[in-house]
Image (cartoon, rainbow, N blue to C red):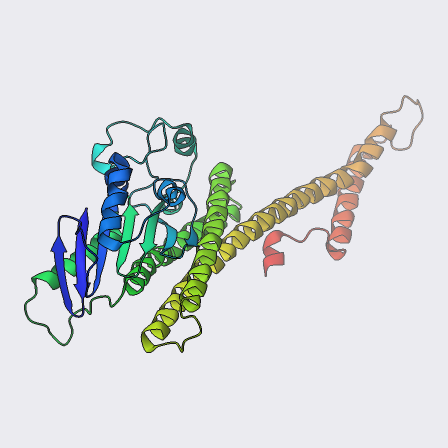
Length: 384
């Protein structure tokens, strides 16, 4: 557990939760699910001493729930945001009871049935990065409490920046400005988490472009239908995830506006609203991109089946032309195959060659007719 006291342009770190509410500045109390789950009641009592705020039992349950969706809730004393962030390496691993396992304690494959189902699915590398885990934020007047998994790139990066500020004795013109309030720190962390989703756009687009080219390749049949279906499922999950995140941020924005109680919005509050609008716009971009990719998959599949139907029609047309060419030849051979003693050309020495010549003339005449009727145009000619 890490505790930072942030005030003005100063940042100090402590290893223990203070037993009094800070007079100046605010606290950032960062804990993991393991630390909170070890003794939830003791942890809640310590938070109460440090912030003067009692966390309700339902919110404690939500804080330790690894499958909780993104959402926002508020009380008279604090606000609570659950935001699902991307997992560092693939899908999160949990115990049989659903409790998250730290990355350094994983020694065997997960035992949960849901994880075994995921392992059987053929999800491409780009789409396997869509696994998420929740991060809980408790917003109070003089504190921000975060609860998350042990491996969190965003939290680690924010902690490193604050530690860098703690170690700096001199301020430079280009040094990082520390957060001015718990709300400011909250939006900085969420913005960094959303940016991770934006980084997925290029690998996702590249993977789907490969599938589109494979679907339209006439030389090799497409066989990765299960992978394509899994990709569509993951994109639908991403779409639902972004919608939940957008709804949570919208409710958080309304919460920031409502706590002014009709007082004129200050410059700091105005900056918070601008920042949260920027976060919502980033989430909307990810949502729109997921919808475009899903639409691209559906369009590529439709074009694929249209191309297959077109190739089937080409084959059927070729077979039909061959059948039409042999029909008069079959008629002639059938006539001369009848058992009559007297038939024209039957006893003529040149009868065989006359019959063969007439067959050749008929075939050439039919080919010319088909060519003029544009029945024999090749695919290469049509592409031109």
